[in-house]
Length: 334
Image (tube, rainbow, N blue to C red; front, side):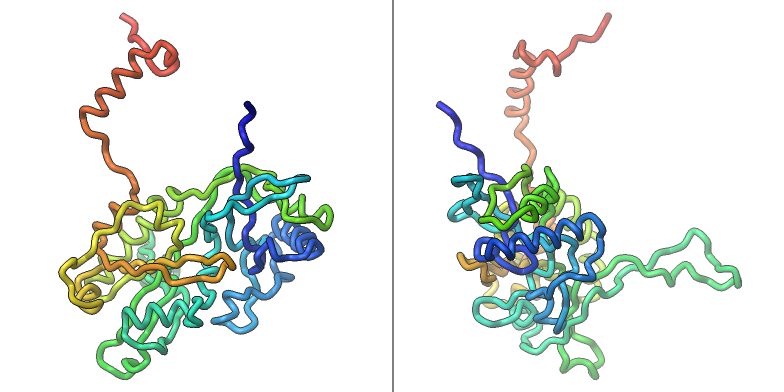
């Protein structure tokens, strides 16, 4: 009996639009635009980004090829693709998180109400956080230049405007973490859509969301650098992720299980995770807020745990006894 074709990940949202609700001509236009951007890197002709423009009026898509999110498609008739029911879309562009929530509230207001207890924060983008220490202590004029080179940024900072003239500025840091994907590039998809007006196509390439590159390899080192410093400053780090990302993590431990309210949880936390989800119409929804520690965040991001000694030994014996594993088991020459 033949196996049913395995669903593949393809474009869910393109230049801010749900690919399933576009017209065939719109899909062809975006295919041609994305193929050109992918080849040249020139995004000067990009359309308006409906997400970033909620914060920066008139802002255009700043990601070459314009893929906001991906999802799995099953094969349909005549090469078409059908979204897999109940599957989560996967955010691959950080600007996607700037869509207003289904309540009409912005992401930053939701965070600010929880973290700063205000609903009108000042929002600051990409603030330098680190300074490089140069190998050379002085410049050509003999002046110290080592501590002036900035390196590393905080994605967003939310500031309580009422504290601008106070002795201590009240703010929190916000990191938005989308997912990378591994496998085939998107160029074959762009070319397929660019060729002619069409329905949604079954993805040409094979790819998958790459949680390990996005979480343990990228986000975890970022937290290791930023959280200890901000903790010493008495500031909190917020991390925004989508539900797919969250579901691939280990469980996050509550920073203070006996807390009576969010203020007590916040006071005892280092990292606060804001999880968003998407409804069937791809509207962003508030899903969860988890107040936790840096140590718990590290464990959750790792999403692995060591085998027991007994399990490891049993697996090792099975490999040694398996005659089909000659490519893994060898005898040292005498």
